[in-house]
Length: 74
Image 1: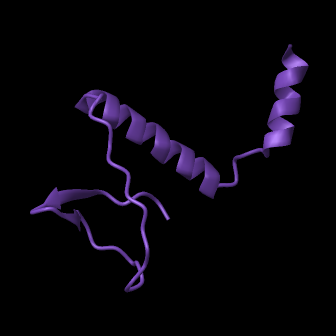
Image 2: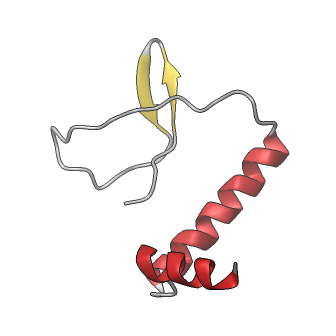
């Protein structure tokens, strides 16, 4: 499941769109850092979306293979 976007309203966390979470599902919530401006955050979100699309398409390699390829370049 991708990240869920939410905001705080009257001290409660409110999702910005409906979800398919089961009733009583347990979540971990991490606040978003305020260090990024809107342009940086949009760029990060675009990169994450692209990464998820690659993952869904199977366009990935496992960690040991990646490390072997990286070592071969050195």
